[in-house]
Length: 517
Image (tube, rainbow, N blue to C red; front, side):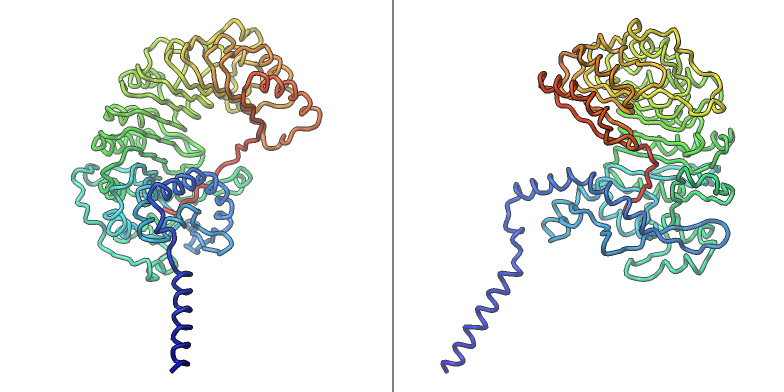
């Protein structure tokens, strides 16, 4: 009898220890503490994703698909986990997932590297999680350059999804190898199963652009996706890759009409980004008409956009003037802005402006142009276009007689300034009268420029400066001993004034876009 009692006691102790080991202590934490943990993991999420990008790219595998194109998909490897710390934390238990779910589904990207058919997205995932989606990034297919069989409309979308249903647990994606022309089979709607990788500079000499195919979402699937995201406020659109081909006027006219039809049903949209092909561009008409149908638009970013006729420059300026809610504008690698914009009124609420590599924007006109067109700016970024080969733009600006000290920006509310080095002009002198600047970031500052810039800052031109950040090209960092010694007086000056001083590197290498969703 005593032996049985001892055995039972031992079993109870073992069970108690087992319960202690398997107990979910996270579930006992109050919501306030869990939210702080989630906040910390979410803030660190972007840095973690950036560090994982390279490893994920190494895990891309090539699938045989015939002679027409090459397909890539993602192969999971334990040493390179596909989940971030935040994503892993969110699936610990049901309570944590319910808290993290709105953040997990806040933004989605298409196409993805995960081989999930669009039927599964449209019929299974988005009906459950679509109401949490606020931001969508979409790459378009060439079908957007074609006249659709019926007008593109989100309101008339049936929302019934595709005819085929695939389970993630089943190996239904074998048709990739079985059917080499799977992308031409409309019933499969497999445009989410493949994605073309961005071309790196060293690959350009070996690429046959005629054999490249841009993968993305068809108009049909874009409508089905967006129609299930009732809280959508941000839309990013990537145009199909076109190699070095110039924009075709007929295709651009069709794309303009299709985008206008799509966005006319999204009047709640507040943030829009439109990007042309990486090595080419889309015409300005493709963004002018769509912008007109978005009355609540607060931020607009356009890249790889060109003009076919000079009148389009004025048309875009007029269109932006009528965007009464626009607060942030970014124009990158475009030729749609020139000195004539100074004769127009800008968006009345514009406070944040970013101009990078605008081919028709000349430095000598910029202080007057921006001060006249957008006098209420609080944030400004400038990077002037300097083609490395005169063949691309033989007509370049002559700055030999330009004196930046005599051409000042008049922006009384400017607090954040980001500028990129210009090889022919120290145009940071154009801001010596901008006494309200609190944050100054300078990109591509080479060691040979340090003396001139340091002397400028030591003159204390910005009495309200709180942060000074110098970003040096990755190839020139860390600085050599001589350059490091030159920076010492600047560090001492910032310390004496209570200014935070950061010296770091940056890279301009193309990013490979890899996302899970």
